[in-house]
Image (cartoon, rainbow, N blue to C red; front, side):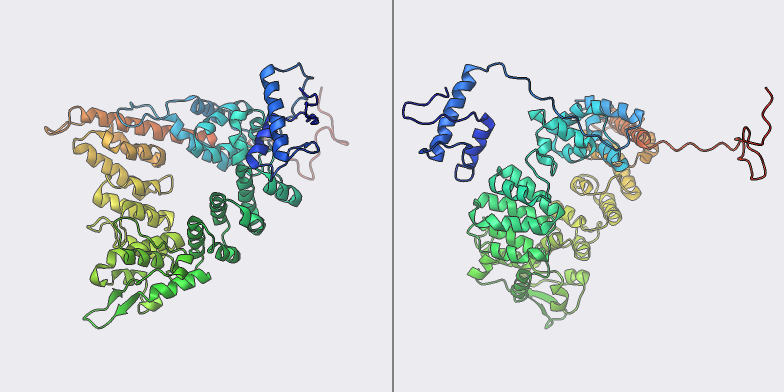
Length: 571
């Protein structure tokens, strides 16, 4: 098949199918075929090579010389797992129950749901993964993307070595910066430039992410070098990677991106700039927003008055304001919300009489604009991660409306809580549960640090006990029960033991509900005890302590047995 064709074309050397596919995906204008005969254009040469390779693949393979053996797997210098923890890992990886969603689950713990917590603890101790567990660990990470960061950190360099030998584990090469065979060292400028120019999108995205995580400026400069020639969808994805290491140094590039022809790219650039309170865009937005919001002192008490913008001009659109509102929203309120959420929160105390966030939030807002204004402040507090404003907008957890004045939904409240310190967050959610129960608390609980602080753990256990006494089935609270199994402090198992007995059911209770609750609490207690055992198994063994009964070392005046000048022991 490599003979000269009738038209006189020169035969092409062998090319691997993967090389041909890569060249076709990139386009011959970005990567020419390895060998292009004289007189043939690159696209035609690529098609010739593909035709030859296709026939060869269909015809079969000749026996080939034995390939070189793969290099030895790299060493992992981390200490090995304690034997009990290694056995536990095997058990966790062997479990494939996956946690049956909803319905009756029995009293056995869901081991796969404990694997992420086990991996986090093993990584915190700095252990190396047992070599024999690596295939099962990579299989588990392949099926669950949420496991991948912790699983690959625990698996270490040998996982990348294995991933190069098994196509099913190639995700490890993409997920680990520097792990892919084609992802160069970020210090190798020539290799970085070559991959950026010729690599597939996934390779280029991984390269940009690795650069931003280590040295943000070279990553931004690399992106700027090809920005004008990138596709709109690629520009959007690459721009999103600038969130890592975002700083004032990125402002000139982002300002340039505000003029992009893609609306989504402009909106993302504006969002990133508004997260930099000192940026020129944030200052422009502050001027526009303060022209719309003012303090009125003419009445009996001060109040905020709002006059939304009359139009969305070209400059506003360039700064990321979307002109067309979604269905059901008025244009002017839509524009106002975008201006306020992009304005630095530090602008408002000076504009509204020197008041702090809590005083500002407590001010009445005229003409029904309070909901719109407070919702925009909520989005600004989340974007700018401002704890003081988040605290003010959340309000008291025991408020009759189940939230603060600006918390328009549970999702917004969960985002506002993320700006608070873990202990304060736990206390607020505990207060919310004590007042409003568990039915609306699931989203809030998911954002709390693990293990839950004592006030939060007590509130959850008490609320579950109240729900049990109400006589309903526990399946309505299966999500909270699942979180409790993973997040409650194992010390709470002692308090739960009193709930294991089947209670007397009231007349209006659902049939058999008491037994189902006892089963659910049994599973919870069993899981908490298992987590405590797992923590003990991962604890490094204590160093041996010298016994007080050992013979003390001789003093300077005492001879050492067997030394020169000392009497030999009797034989």
